Amino acid sequence: MNIDFRLLAVAGLSAAAASVVTARESGAPKPNIIYIMSDDHAYQAISAYGGILKDIAPTPNIDRIARDGMRFDRCLVTNSISGPCRAVILTGKYSHVNGFLKNEGQQPFDGSQQTFPKLLQKAGYNTAMIGKWHLGSDPTGFDHWEILPGQGNYYNPDFIHKDGRHREEGYVTELITDKCIKWLNEVRDSGKPFMLMMHHKAPHREWQPGPKELTLYKDVNFPEPSTLFDDYSNRGTAEKTQDMTISKTMRIEEDLKLYKDKSKMKATGLNRMDQQQMAAWNDVYDPIIRQFYASDLKGNDLIRYKYQRYMQDYLACIAAVDKSVGEVLDYLKKTGLDKNTVVMYASDQGFYLGEHGWFDKRWMFEQSYRTPLLIQWPGVIEPGSVNNDMVSNLDLAETFLDLAGVAVPADMQGRSMVPILKGKTPGNWRKEHYYHYYEYPGSHMVKRHYGMSTERYKLMHYYYDIDEWEMYDLKADPDEMKNVYNDPEYSSVKKKLHKRLNKLMVQFDDSEELAKTFLPK
Ligand SMILES: [Ca+2]
Image (cartoon, rainbow, N blue to C red; front, side, top):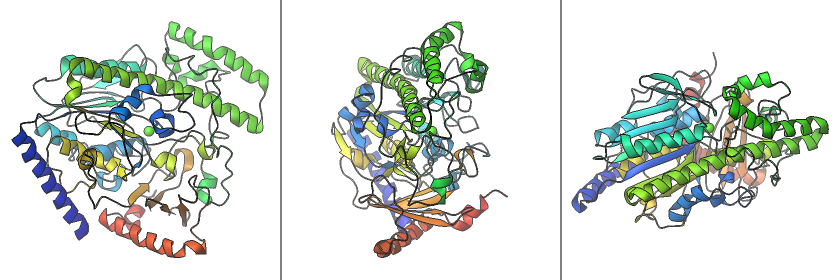
């Protein structure tokens, strides 16, 4: 940790302390916080963010948060994969500090460490966590919790709470919504301010739509991203050796539900459907299956078809999430809780919807590096505002604490976004963002990399089983199709970026030496 960072931390502390005094003096009640997070929800699939899907698959309820609050256009994650993102949110610390680096081959999250919910509890908040948790250990710091085991199931899922595990009948997005509204309405301590984490499983792979959305997009033809047939030329080994393409990696049966052999439904939990659910499912998918195998598609036609099926199911899952958000917003309005409740909508990370020919996440490229973030705070956030500051999931814990008037501990590594919510971005807000991804070898074979981004550039290093640097100029090349690291025209920019990256690694206590200690033995 360098001196700059300590000064920043101290400045953050005194600012937080000052806001406590102000809140107490004014006698204003502490705001409630609802943090709604979905899993793998690409910003490209939220109509408030625009993009090629906005008119064809709109998200009117999620958009209400943008309309009444603030849309963040550069919310960046520190390590683009589920469990690690969740650990960063709880701790306000990078993966190498909180100890949760990857999903696969990972020790459970150490819930005995400092996390924001524990600090909120101490400050008198009633805390709850409902939905996908994905950290291996039981939640700590929550007065109430009910979680899905691991990735969870879409149909008739199991839930775990402190007294054990049980199966519930229904569709996961609707069950989580009902549980959250029940907690808000009946279970929580109404004498205390509250913090609710509402974590959807959807729209995670294998993108199984709910009974109410089965036919929503089945005949819709979606526009294709311009990079669907990317051949990874002008880039390095990592892009050429990944295993996450729609063309090769996406499975016809399990991912696209085009089952020749329905006993394979077991592998993705679809066998959990009851007779009625299964009949409704087969009514929709059987004709699609017959048509697909009769058409005998090949080459690019097959890729195009797979992309369409992927979008039809993925976006149908999101439609249920959008309804869920609407139900929560309606409940808050009906009860008057909306007036003093900060509502946030985010995904754990971004996702590829065919860009570069991919699905999944992991990379420091835009679609997985950026995550949607929308926040409404009536009376404070200017409705309809759009923010371009470089914020991060690293800042969420600090923001929750600051909202509650709790001092941000000096060892947290992000910063409270509360000044930004008030329309006053601090002059010394970050101008570069640090990233580090670890899950390799592993699913989808995206090589380990660390790097940093500025407003215009990205610098990345793949350091394990290859040693390759990449650099992108987002202004000249917004689709990130050309590595300019060895382009002589960029040599002076490159030098500066290296310096800034080194400084960030010192600031966040990361290094290649430390990264080597996490490599497979
Ligand atoms: Ca995820």
